[in-house]
Image (cartoon, rainbow, N blue to C red; front, side, top):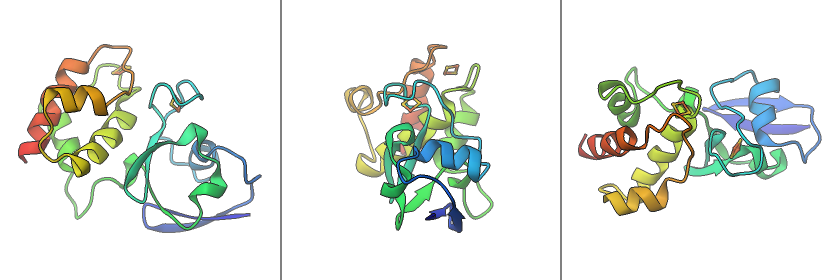
Amino acid sequence: MARLTINGKSYEVTVDPSTPLLWVIREQVGLTGTKYGCGIAQCGACTVHLDGAAVRSCVVPVSAAEGKQITTIEGLAGGGALHKVQQAWVDLDVPQCGYCQAGMIMAVAALLKDKPKPTDADIDAGLTNICRCGTFQQVREAVHMAAKA
Ligand code: FES
Ligand code: FES
């Protein structure tokens, strides 16, 4: 049994404590915005926030997330408005296939908390998510737009 707080709601799930958080979020809780890409902490498609910090949920055991605030892409917006990163993504039409984008947005939201006005070098160093569609240039522009919002 694990007790989790996801997007401000409490959940009790019956799983082995070593189960990756990603699978609990998707399969037990039914929030499928968080994606599976590689399963080995390389691609970032599974990025969520744990107490505000970006983590790759495919390698976080559910036991490590107990007692923390878990935020997924479904919980990023608040107060009836998109998060500024989501709004920049819409304004600049960033996604192509979209598969990597939930994780990318979660990673960017965490990056902007640490570095509210990142340089291109900060973005390149802090954003290691992989996009097979090659949206990196649009991502960079959208990060700058969100930083100005
Ligand atoms: S699925 Fe987690 S980093 Fe790729
Ligand atoms: S938009 Fe297709 S993988 Fe990134």
